Length: 164
Image 1 (cartoon, one colour):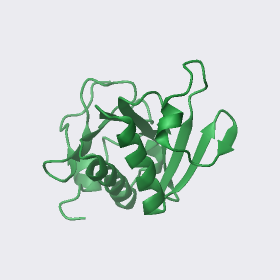
Image 2 (cartoon, rainbow, N blue to C red):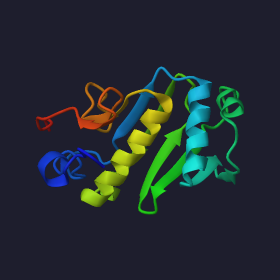
Image 3 (cartoon, rainbow, N blue to C red):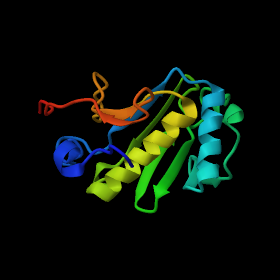
């Protein structure tokens, strides 16, 4: 990947799982049911491993519209996606206005795994034509890295170390 982030120089400290939370949050804002469907189509087209579940029941991958129009008291479905056998992203269908998921920092150690993450975020961002920012777990004040559609790549969004 041209101009990719370099593990040692850029992000080793950002993706350190001992830094207070190891499940960073990723949000794609201002989405629609069509964006969710585009994401589901991308998962299938790329041949990424996946598991869709409603509660404990593992089910075939549905269309986005019925999942997002379920009753308010229904259990929130999840979609686990493996862009690499060692890297999993967990999507939750909380609403159509935002696609949100998390990844496990313990699975993102080293340059090879960073490249997988960057490729995954880029694929999603390109398909949706939207930024794909990543935030420290539980801290949505400012993202620390993410896919930037104008740069057409994943960029570092925070250069300073996070306060404890």
